[in-house]
Image 1 (tube, chains in turn cyan, orange):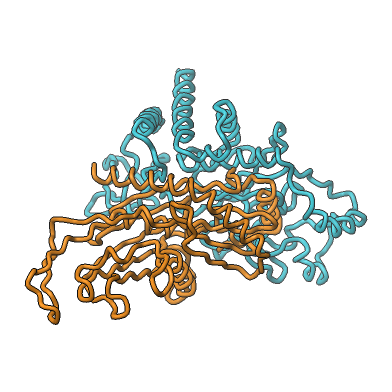
Image 2: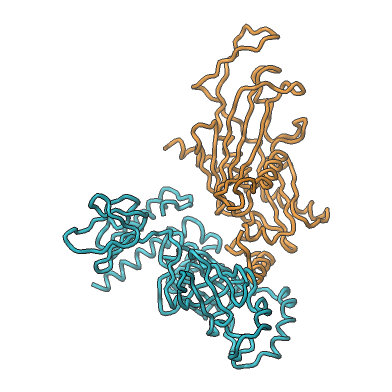
Length: 321
Length: 287
């Protein structure tokens, strides 16, 4: 936040400061000194038994932070969550990744984790939908399904014993993402929720919030029914790529995609958690203020979003009381 | 750079064709420019320019030297650009050398003019102290910290800002110098002469993607380009330099069209840049 690369005028700076202070005071964490840098002492009651977690170390009897981040306390566990950390996967998370390699019977995906994730050929639905054993021919045709640099949406299946990650994409809603743009934000901004796939009907747009910080905004694609045998369709699809060159996304849908993408960028710069409701509210705010799509990335809109978020949270806080 | 899938490439090309790029800009809109001056206190002048995620620093150092025998009334100016490995891992060691030389040569061509010094954006005659004997040597260095496309425009803007920030120390020449000896010079520590930067041009890079040109391409958009033409235009609307990159050939009518588009875009860019530089200098004085 301190490195906000925006040219703020004096009044904008004051307004932003006020909004951020309001948000900090509303934050539910009781300890205001929750953020620490390396070698800061963490305030702990030493009489209570507590467990030292990640990012902490015992130095001369004091509990000291080893990374810059936020102190989290869960029951007796005290740990420091680093803000700029890589994504920490959990089983069942929905992630969006980019294919970096096509190997024997598997694809390797980059998902902003310390290792590349593996998507096995057997964890993918076949294009013709039949549940069968993967043959050598399937292995040779892997590039027909996903190529290098393709953007893929999948779910975390499990961890291997050596620490690497396995993904699965068995359902129809997973798979290749086309006709849109990929945005990269910090992973801690995308919290686990019930739904990560959002179909925004009023815009006709698909929004996929990957927990690894990769967010996909694109045209809506109907999930194909796997039971329908696609033999006839597959020959049709091979002709479509040439026609695709002529049919671009319609302008109105493109404007909506850009507006949503810019809303995500603004929220990520300000450090607010990203979920579909907040994105929609930000887009509505931009249309009410009648701001140009590109001006959404300007300083005035950032200040407006921060102020509106402070308002919203104070209202929610009042309602709870 | 990170690769792009076929779908994403198609989306970018479609956006440019429909005049609505991925971040909502029109084809001829620049990203917000953020200028900071005086970032390197030991240099005579310095500036840092951020253009979206592209981040460059330019610094100017002046040393006393001897003018060349062919041009005794002109000072020497050298421009050199370095790509730091923090911008991309491939710049480590000698990986960034090709790009660095390309940028240095393009900047020299645009700002320094031809071999005889004709048509230079920066006037070298203002650098001479004693004609034929003593002159100022200006070393302009550029450093690329973060690369997200359009490095040439950002570097030219940074050089312009750094030169506006430059204070060349006042030099007192000993009055009794004979024509053969090297005159004694006294470099003042207190008084500085500001450089006149009104004539310095800016560079506008037009990237051709498909049938349209865009200004200020991000690195994703640059990966889709067929060719790019960088045109250096000064305040009077004169062209000070022209560089073309990219493997695809261009019809001459397209080049002429690009030049007129660049002239049109440069007017707004020069005004915006001048106001940003003035604001940066003002805030530097306050702090």
